[in-house]
Image 1 (tube, rainbow, N blue to C red):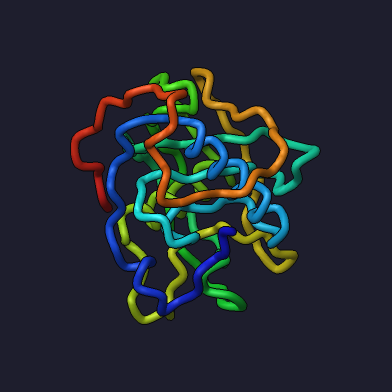
Image 2: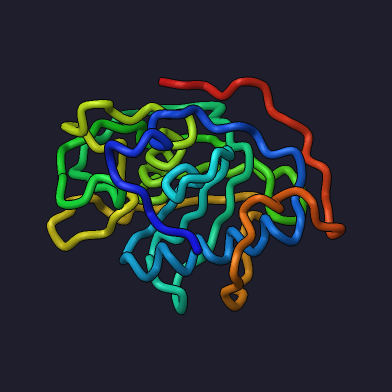
Length: 205
């Protein structure tokens, strides 16, 4: 069963490996990550936050399984950033730590969805901020001191982030499924497989 690792767990400092395929075990993992994220009152969760060495993350800006849209980003790459905004952020792996963090106000991000299709999103507002946070996790860009949380994966009443607006193109949404147990070592071995091209090294800011 998955669990969220906390700083200073070494998984938070290791750069993640790109996924090579989408299969049944990966889909089960994603479902379990969403369920764990909701249980912890989060809006996003990266694979290395549950001690998995792969480059992907999940988001739902509403933080509620009955509301909002579920997004899955496999092998994400931020292709463009513009503008700057600062807001208070927290993180599920850095519990009870909040700090102002500057982020790009708008990003263009490409990734693959659970159908193995490439998708592109133009994001602003809370969704852009949360995506940048989770992207930082996947590229091991979080602070090693713990004094600066990598971003906004925890919703909190004290958080000053504005919900803003988001625009998305492509079919990146993830339909809700019931939770399944996970055999982590079997990721990539099931017969229901979609091979994934691998992006070049992601941009790190």
